[in-house]
Image 1 (cartoon, rainbow, N blue to C red):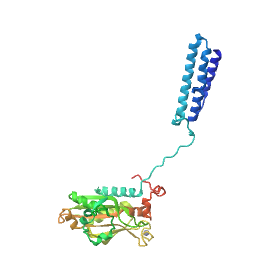
Image 2: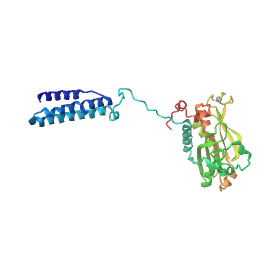
Image 3: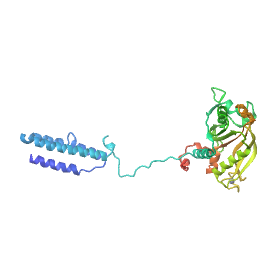
Image 4: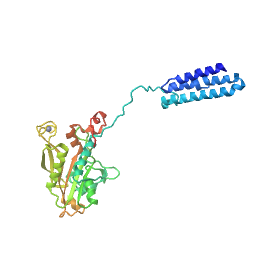
Length: 343
Ligand SMILES: [Zn+2]
């Protein structure tokens, strides 16, 4: 009995000083002390040699030892993480941790949010519409009847199941839907994705993003349009950027204009982006055609309005000097990681 107690005392010390920091160590410990052929089981075997009147005391000492070993094993498992329970782990806990990759906002999203924020301050609400449109909202209602030559300006994807369905070629369809359901005053911008059947290249893509704006109320004039766009350019590109308007043609506006800004890359001196003219075109605009207002039951004698539309990729190109449109949809992290924004 004396000898056994000495042995137990020694095992106790061994257990207390056992060190291990991974699942493998916990498992080694379990097999050595708590396994079916382990030390504690072996010591229990000594019970048969203990005199009867000391069996009770021996039992208590052994129970205490077993409890100590089990507690130690639990502690080792915790130190070794979950892997220990699954039968061992080879994780080295002293290695530095893996850094979490933090994503960045897509440049188109950054520009869209900025545009929304600028027009929001002027009281424009956001309107949305479907990307699969019908002919009426995309063309006919916008003063583009069938066989109108201007339809050729936009190569359209039609939907096989129904010749009346198509992928919207511009966000003007959202303007149509808004005028259909709301009465003036209307003051909206419609950001969204649009589709055209074009060969993909650095300068053209089969889908891109637009933002259009519409303001219909009594006494809305071309001066209001110009002031709204001046404000936008200054907020987006800075106060030093110059603006010019050129007469143009759109079927849904009369008169129509295209707006250029002084090149944001060379400041107007001339570079490859502005084709050495010092000016870059950024949007089309004009006064809403009276026929369009009439199409939606808005009295064109009482109300007037202006509309404008721009490509978000174009704004991105000027802001970030990205020369290849395809980069926006290739999901190349080396490209995307270069953009950071809190908006
Ligand atoms: Zn330039």
